[in-house]
Amino acid sequence: MEILIQNIKGLVQVRNTSLKWVAGESMADLPVIENAFLYLKDGKIADFGYMDNMPAVDADEVINASGRFVFPSFVDSHTHLVFAASREEEFVYKIKGMSYAEIAAKGGGILNSAKRLQQTTEDELFESAMIRAQEIIRFGTGVVEIKSGYGLTTRDEIKMLRVAKRVGESSPLRVKTTFLGAHAIPKDYTDRNDYIKLIKEEMIPAIAEEGLADYIDAFCEKGFFTPEETEDIMEHGKKYGMKPKIHANQLHISGGVQVGVKTGAVSVDHLEAMGEEEIKALQQTDVMPTLLPGAAFFLGTSYPPARDMLNAGLPLALATDYNPGSAPCGNMPLMLSLACIKMKMTPEEAINAATINTAYALELQNEYGSITKGKVANVFITNEIPSYAYMPYAFGSNLIHTTILNGEIINKGLFDAV
Ligand code: NIG
Ligand code: FE
Image 1 (cartoon, rainbow, N blue to C red):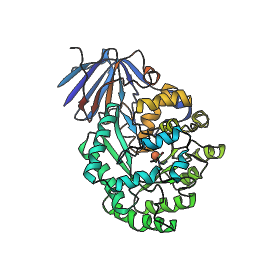
Image 2: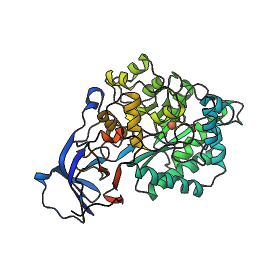
Image 3: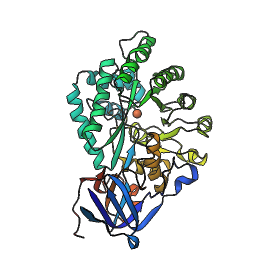
Image 4: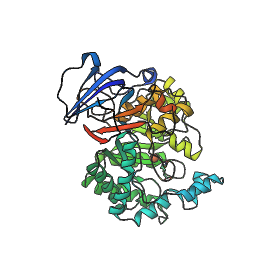
C-alpha cells in the first residue's frame, strides 16, 4: 500500500534523524514543513518535503490535505486501558468532598476495580478494552502502554496482561505492557510482606515465563508501597527482564522519583508532588519524567511543576493515565490542552512531550514519535484548522479527520477530490 498525502498545510514534527528525546529549551522547537507532501510505502515513512520538490511516485491512494495539518500519531506511554467497570459512584463521592485516599480506605479505589476484574472473564475484558482501543485511535493515538494492576492475584494479573497483548495483536495499535502487581495490597493480607513475596516469587516469574510484560511498575505512595518495597520489587523485576516504570509522587513527595533514578527506570510518572530535590535527582539521568494532567484534573489535585522542570533542563513526556479511578479519559489532544492551560507548556512543548518523548518512555524512539524516513507510517490528518496551536487551543474538540496506522487508512473522513 502506497499513500501520497499532498498540499499539506503543515507537516508537524519532522526530524531528519531519530532523536533520543527533546529536553529543556529544545522542547520549544517543533519543526514544521509548510506546503508539504508525505509519502508512505509498505508501512513506513518513505519520503517527505516541500510540494515543490515532490517526486513522481506511484500511489494507491492520493490524499489532498490542503488546509490540514499532518502529525505523527500520539504515543500514550501510560494507561490502565484494561479494566472491568467504570467507577462513577466514586466520582460522586469526590464531588461531595471525599478525597482519593479516603475513598481508597473505604474499599473503593483500586481494590474496587480489582474485585470487579476478578469476576470478569478474559473475553469480556478483551471486548471492552477493544472498544477503548478504537476510541483512542480516533483521538490520534498509535502506540499505547497498558498496565496490569487491577488483578492483584497471579491468575488475574496474568489475565489482564494477556488481554493487553491481545489488544496489540487484534488492533492496529502498537502495545507495550507493564506489570503493576504492586498497585495496592489486597484486603485479605494481614501481613503486607506476604503479598510482596507473592509478587516476587510467583507473579514475576510466571509473567516472565509467558513473556507478558515489557516493564514493571509500582504505586510508590503513602498508604500503598514504600520506596524500599518499590526498589525491592523493581530490582526483582529487572532480573526477569522487566525495566522499571514507576508511579511516583502523585499524592505526596514519596521517594518514588529517587527510587526511579536508583533503579534506572525508563520513566517516573505522575510527579504532581515535586520539590527541588526531586527535580535535581532527575537531572543528568536517562529517566523520562512523565506528566499525567488528566489525573490531576479529575482528582482536583495540583499539577506537576512543568515549567520548573523545563527550566532545569529536563525532558517531559505527556500521557493520559486512562483508568477508571483517577483519569477516565484516553484523549491525547485534551492532554495537550491541559498541559498548555494548566501547566503553562507551549503547544510546541506539549506536542514534543506527547510524541518524541513518550516514544522514548516506551523505548520506541527509533520507530515512532516523529516524521522521519524509515519510521512506522503512523500519522493523522486534521480537519482544516488555522495552525497547529489550534489543536490544544480548541480543547475538547476532536479535530482528527483521518488516521493512518502502519501505512493503512484506519478512520477516513471525506476528502475533496484531488
Ligand atoms: O495512575 N495511582 C495509581 N493508579 C492509577 C489510578 C488507580 C485507580 O484509582 O484505579 C493512577 O492514577
Ligand atoms: Fe497510572
